[in-house]
Image (cartoon, rainbow, N blue to C red; front, top):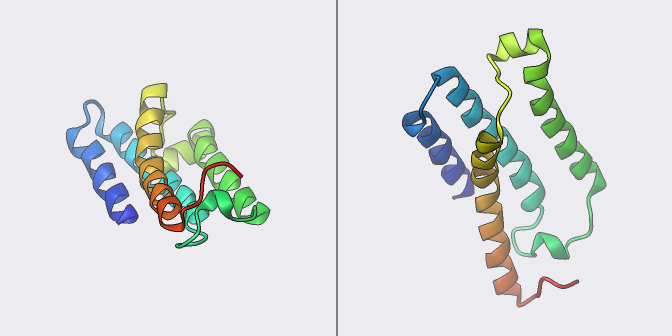
Amino acid sequence: MAGGFTAVAALMVLLMGEGDFERLRWVAYTALVIGQVVRAYANRSLEMPVHRLPSNWVLAGACVVVIAIQLLIPSVPALADAFRAHRLDLGEWVVVGVIALAPALLAELIRTARTGSTWIA
């Protein structure tokens, strides 16, 4: 369901967004990339809330690297041209954040409720 939400939300950015289509495409693509990164880290367990799991520094590091690359692409002219990438403004990052984080936050709330755990360690 999380992947479906992210895909539909990214399509909605393309269909309902205003402005340059290439820019909207980059916002949607970035939302998909960041959504996958968040999901990779958040879904380390389908039963236990992520805040109750031990840290996974290798996965966390990989997630940071992927996000850094996504941020870097629009800043390197050859990559920006190849990907038709654009630097995102704050409002676009908010859209990306909501699309990427909403499914993970909902899943975390459900897992927390199922296990009867609390948010306090």
